[in-house]
Length: 72
Image 1 (cartoon, helix red, strand yellow):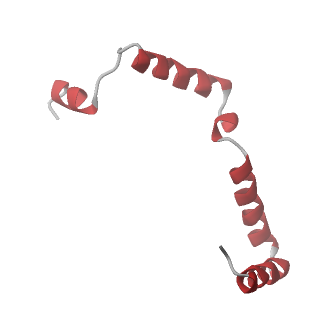
Image 2 (cartoon, rainbow, N blue to C red):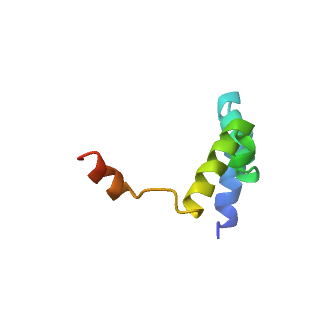
Image 3 (cartoon, helix red, strand yellow):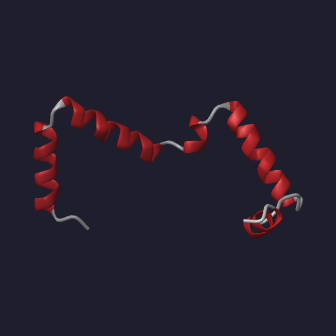
């Protein structure tokens, strides 16, 4: 738990911060409240879902299998 003195120090720092720092803090705040999935395009979501379905159906290869197949 952050002590009240540390909370006060941070609050004072934010009040004195320049625009660049405030924009970064705002991005951080928004990233904590949003799901990264929502930031993906529909095409990206579909490709991920297709890959996940392939894994569930056993249609995938492990890293070791791929490395062996390609002589790595």
